[in-house]
Image (tube, rainbow, N blue to C red; front, side):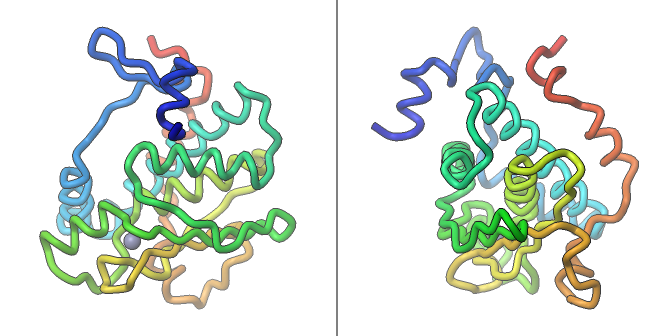
Amino acid sequence: MSFTDKLIAMKVLKFNEGELSIFGIPGFIFMANTVGILNHNMEKRFGKDGIDLIYLLGKHQAYMGSSAFLGKYGYRKDLNSFNMVIKQSEMIGQGKSEILKFDQKNKILILKNLNSPVAKTIRGLYGIQKKPVCDFYRGATTGCFQAMFDEKNDFLGIETKCIAKGDPHCVIEVREITSWGKDNHLVKEQSPKESPENEEFSKFTLNNILKPS
Ligand SMILES: [Zn+2]
C-alpha cells in the first residue's frame, strides 16, 4: 500500500464537497506546468523578488504542514519522521526525493530530487536554464527541515544542482542561515531579501490554517 493509499485509508486525505484537505489543512492542486510557467514568469517580470516570494511561500507552507503533521501525531523530530514528511512532498507531486545527508547535530540536510516535475517542465518549455529553478521545492525542503528543530532556528536552502540546468538531478542543501558562507555565489543568488511578505506569512499560524474562517 502506497503512502498516499494509507493516508486515504486513515481518512487524513479527504475530498468533500469540492474541497480537498490533508491533516485538516485545506489544499489546492495545480498542474506542474502551471507552477513551472508561474516560476519562470515571476522571475522574468519581477526578477529576484519574484523568486524570493515563491521560495518563502514554499518554506512557509512546508514548515506549517510539517509542524502540523509532527504535532498532531506526536512524532519525534528525527530521521524517521523526516522520511514521512518527505513522502508527503512526493505525494503532492514535487518529485522523488532521496536523502544524501541528514545531520541533525550540525543541522545540515542534503536532499536529491531525481525527477523534479517543475524543473522538467521549465526545461521542456524554455530550454536549458543558466541557474537552478526549483524555488518552491527549495523553500519546501527548507521548511520541512526547519520543522525538525525549535522555533529559534532559521534555515536557508540552496539548490546546487538542477535538472533545468542540464544536471542529471536536483540537489538542495539546507543549513542554518548563519552557517552559510556569505561569499558563496549561490548563497548570494538565492538568499531571499528581507521582505514585508515574509513577516506577513509568519502571522499565518498553524492554528489559523487548521481552522480557516
Ligand atoms: Zn531543480
